[in-house]
Length: 520
Image 1 (tube, helix red, strand yellow):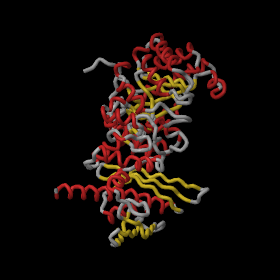
Image 2: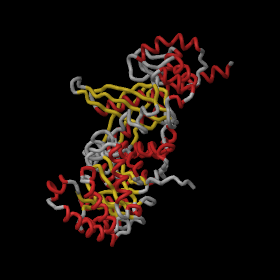
Image 3: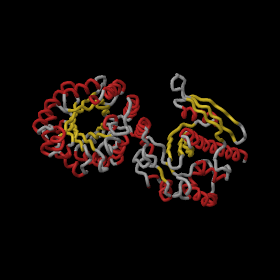
Image 4: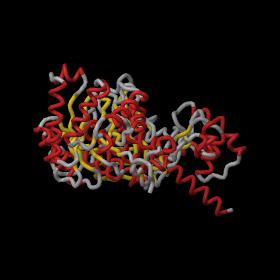
């Protein structure tokens, strides 16, 4: 056992996160995210705002019925009707919490609530006590706490504690504070408010000035023992404190913070991916911890250092957050060490002189594209490429997509492809959608067990084309393909075929290398 303080992770992806424009989720989508949050072992899941709508209440109840492990929480305004709605929604949960709030800053008191300080304090005492009478676990938030007068904030917190609140959340509702300021505020509240030592203080920071994670960690230094956060940092306006960033900061700098969480960090990347999938919002490449570039290296100096010892440029392991191992990205900034290392990883017994010979061609290719793929490197090493620049043996000949909008027949696709040897193959396949069905048909024809990882589509209105990029997983390796077509579906399928072709080309090159080695 460790004597280090435990910092609870209160995840509000399904409540504050979902309130952000573009991130609304159905009940099924919320359940997908709730499952990965439970797998990550978060302490509390704030599943929604029950009084906001019947749909939100139903979603909270669905989460409460299925999810085991975390405490299931519903937000509620400081009034009995909201408290009742929250209690009904979380009723099936084994562990449940009601999170109630009211604005306390001068702006909220005067402009929004039209209430005096005394009226707000009386309401806190009355309604928090009512919530505590029907739920053992009550959390209270003085909304816009950072812009509330410090002495009055202390009075509001004291009233909530006296009424039965077990968690006091101090929210930076508008992302206004600074790390030094919030550390001092938490120390003041923990040390001066009667009963403060008997409750858990929580922090909820927004990212309007880009300091949500820094401010949340600073609050921990001041005595906060719960961080309210969201996967990928989603939330109102600029978002909330990012769950994966706060968790990994505490884990990586445990020597500095002296605290621990119970998070299963290998589930952070799966959680980020699940949220991205159900909300159709891609994870930014440069997103800390879970972005595509978080553990990728293209600069030659960095690649050389990482190949010698990854701690030269990595302070944590990609595997620790559930991502594949660090990735050496071959591009125009890459050096010969990276090219040689990747060639050997692909199974080629390449000399340094061979790398010297192909390096000028490698640089010319790298200047024309964002990333030199494994298949591109194989082409450079073997000198094999089609006259049209295509890598791989397959060409698309015909794609037919079918959707029965009124009947019960599943979407299907009929795909015809031609091999370099002249053979034509046609496969009809069903799928969750017509493009999914086309992808499955392509895999069946090429005999490549590919799974789509990323599909980016961009309509270039000025050029009248759709640009597509597909990234696929094939037996724990990634391949990418690009295409331009007039039609969205055609572009998606063509990009997928280009990626599958790369996998097929690499398989053929490896088989040839193995045959040569066995012959010798």
